[in-house]
Image (cartoon, rainbow, N blue to C red):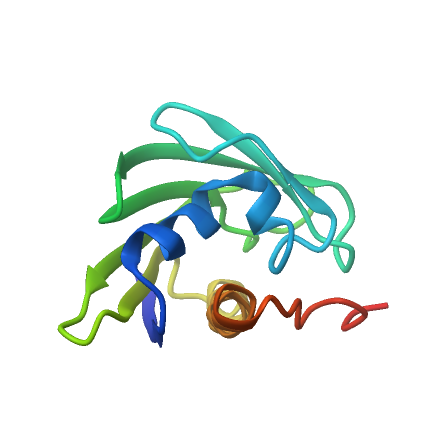
Length: 151
């Protein structure tokens, strides 16, 4: 099974960084270029939209530990048209560093070891890396790096 981990340090307290992820209004300010609907809470299914992709992406939330951890599930995007989509699991872990910054680590797993699985996993790795960069700019400086990036 294919998987990856990405991480970054943000110069804000864990509570600020965590809220910027779970709050759909804040998430829409730097990540979901088409908007986010629904607060990330256990048992919820939230909808994320991206201007560069058609439609909305349902994201199933299975676990939330305030200021510590979020576990999400969504379509793997590795199947051929018309085939049933498998799901991947996304884990976000938030750690307070000694200097007051936050370390956020995002991992995703669940793709098959196929050419389509590899392509889908690389695409998501790129997306989560960009999300972390955009989260840092937004939380630390109020800048939306994705504004105008795709259109």
